[in-house]
Amino acid sequence: MKKVAIIQYMEHASLDTIKASFDQQMENLGYKDGENVEYIFKNAQGDNNIAASITQTFQSEDADVVVAIATPVAQSVASLSKTTPIVFAAVIDPIGAKLTTSLEHPDKNITGTSDEIQVDLILDRALQLQLDLKTLGVIYNNGEANSVTNIQKAKDYAKTHHLTIKEATITNVNEVQSAIDVLANQCDAVFAPNDNTVASAMNVVSHACIEAKVPLYVGADSMVQEGGFLSVGINYEDLGKETANMVDQVLNGTPVSDIPVKVFKDDLNVYVNEDVMNELDMTLPETLLQDKALKLM
Ligand code: TRP
Image 1: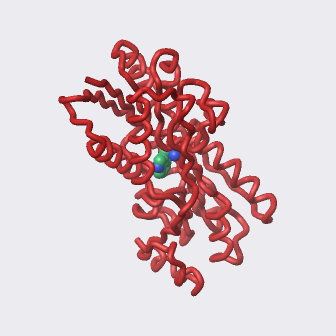
Image 2: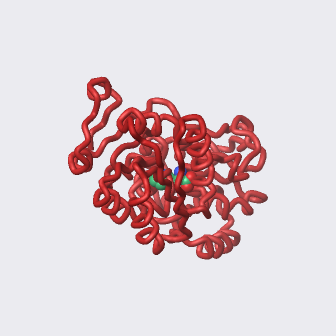
Image 3: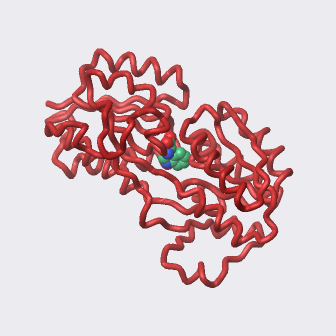
């Protein structure tokens, strides 16, 4: 009987998709809950203190592998890697988050899947659709290492494209409403990266941006589904499935150092929320409409 301890940072559509697809692939690989595998599953509810206490309980579980879904919990359970291999799911920047020093040769008994987001491609679309775009608002939780990485990319992009950035930082979900209410009225467009806290409050962010008639560019398909205007990104079902494949390798005895981090950055789709587009009176150029990568949601 193998023991797999899983920690998920919080519930939001994308993390839930990853978990469901992970579960499905484990089953496809022959793991049957209660027969040849025991799962322990914990949700940290977006709270680093809860993540820390879950990490502590995992210490005494003596699991064969620990799985961490999203950056903040991967960082939390990293301390367990002295004794237990760790496989993370959807960590934007594993090196920046200090989970490994090499993607090719993981050196800390930690590997997994990365959803490195292509901030340039998202902002290229923004400039293509809004020729008069000058001030770009960004909203993110500055306690999420994944977002700090992406906002730095947005700042670098802004420098070379004559954009001014206005920042709204939050520390938890309760601050989203007031932050976005102010921000949306100060800019021509808003960019919300692949930030867990913002993703869990998309209804609020979306509503404020539509009210202010400001297009909201986002870091994931699920955030478009839930009211963002446009994103360029990956398919998270594939990522969840690949995370299960890596767990299978670990359970079969492959050393973590022989399992490179798998970065998802190819086969990107352009996701557009049609209802939001209509609310904003926006239209898409013919080239994009003909593009096979376009997914209207
Ligand atoms: N990449 C995020 C992280 O590193 C987790 C994540 C996966 C996410 N899908 C998302 C965040 C969608 C926001 C929206 O923590």
